[in-house]
Image (cartoon, rainbow, N blue to C red; front, side, top):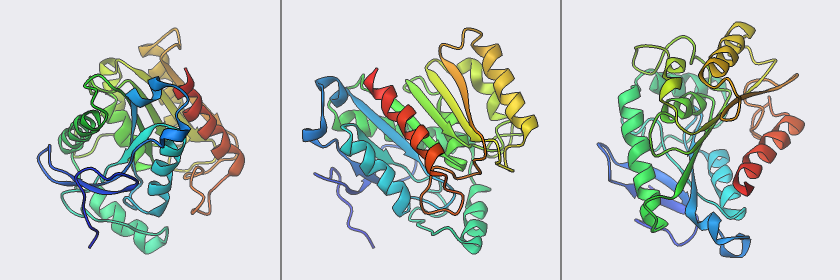
Length: 256
């Protein structure tokens, strides 16, 4: 069992009790020597994991944001069924993770996201701190869902599949919520991703253009030859060039 701390002084596990269920999260406060401006102190990133849980790779993403000067928190998506899920990238682990995914609901994910954001803002001592949500795989789908929260300023949805077909727990497709998104939104996917076929990519791009004809807030970024999971060094689908591009887009967003 990990040791929980309400507010870790450095990267570590913490337990957030602001919402309907406890959230076992990984928190990395910004490294002071990496801060270029005080403005970065007023920003935080909520990282939403794949179906494999808050595993070593997801924790490394959080720590990488902190090293760049932006505090970050990884939140579990399966807090109700597997609050300590930490899986590697095998086929059996994928089956296990997808089982927990099927038990999630949009209402539960939104409530947990709002609780995590409230907690981060308290740590920054800034109730108006700018919040960016970054999600991968099912976390990408959940990121698009959480983009509708009024507290979210910017969202990066990395290869979030299924947003055209439905939403966690059932109901209208998550993509239908675009009119409620008030911040910036970037959807990123590989053109060789079988989980997001061309028909889905076209539907996403069309919906983004309809919701934001100027293209100033909503955009799609595609990566030729990239498969599902291209950002993750621990997966066979990792593509260094696409991953480097994805990281540039993330870090450039904080320099604006």
